[in-house]
Every structure is written in C-alpha cells, then in structure tokens.
Image (cartoon, rainbow, N blue to C red):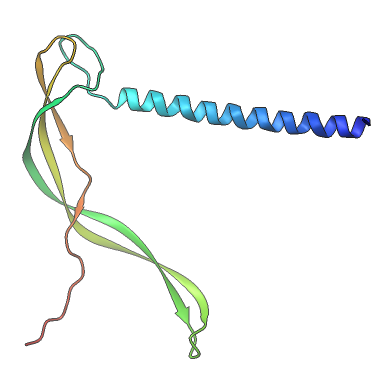
Length: 130
C-alpha cells in the first residue's frame, strides 16, 4: 500500500468515528430529555413513568397558531414558474388539564397541571348559499 491509500483509510475511519460521536451525543441527549420530561413526585422526589389516575379538563382558552403554506405560481400554460410561501394565523383552543398521577415508589397521588397542544378550530370559511 502506498502512503496515499493509508491516509485515505485513516480519513474514513476518522469521519466514521466522528459520526458515531455525534449519534452518541444525540442519543444521550434524547435519553436525558425524556427523563426530565417525566413528572416528579413531590413526596419522594422520584422521576418515574408514573401511571395516570385521572385527567380532568379545567380550563379552555382561545389561542392562535401560525401556519405556513407553499403555493405554486403557474403561467398560462400550467407550468410552475415560482413557489410562494404564505403565512397566516389560525384560531384554536388550548386546553389545560388537572392530571392526577400515582407514584410508583411511594404510592401517593399527586396533581400536576398540563396543557395540550393547541387544537385547531375549523379555519376554512365556506360561503354557503341556499
């Protein structure tokens, strides 16, 4: 083997190791994120995947969501000339729940307020004619 081939082989190995390091970092970040998103028992301070005992809606509020849509601009022959990006606001509803968990470690129940993502209300207005 020539020295050039040896250098190409080591460059590929370095790139492969760097890729593994990046994937490993992302994997560890995902694990840490999933751990800290779990509810923490206020009594024993344990973060576990506690079972939900009940989930009751306590508040609904009007909210808006930003939507983007891409539309093609066509010429008279039907060929796409350009693509436009349109931004608009859509009405929605944000619901807050009182969630009751039971701790897997100490068995006590505890409450936590959680909010769902905004549910989009029908935003297509149809002009109805009889």
